[in-house]
Length: 149
Image (cartoon, rainbow, N blue to C red; front, side, top):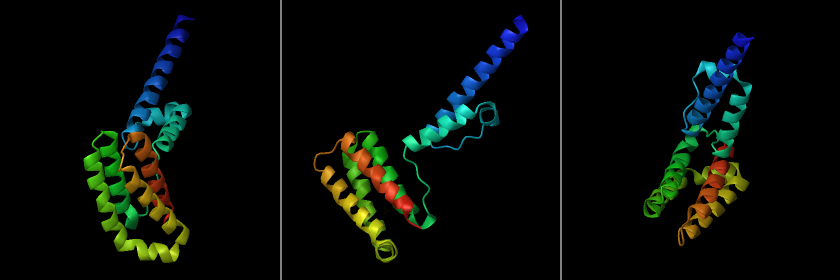
């Protein structure tokens, strides 16, 4: 009986540790490579997926990666409270957008309009910047970029 209790506690500890490591890796933006956490607990894998969704990470087509990088760099500066740097980072978005916007407008007019609206909203939010305002706007923009093919 004592051996079963020890085994149970060891397994519980392993699953808990795997879950924590999975969540930490997921929230740091790195892929989870710990085979123990992947095999040990389907709950850990579900937590990882939920954490990625909560961070609003989307798959970006390679030709739109420069746009997503600018948005992510801007968001990182916003999250650190450096709004001057965030605004400087976001000014790079227009440069990258100018390179591809005509193609987006032609192939996906609805996404084009959404991106233009998001850009305007973000520019306006920088007039009185706050994390609470800017982070959701940047996440929305990244989500829209993620829909482009």
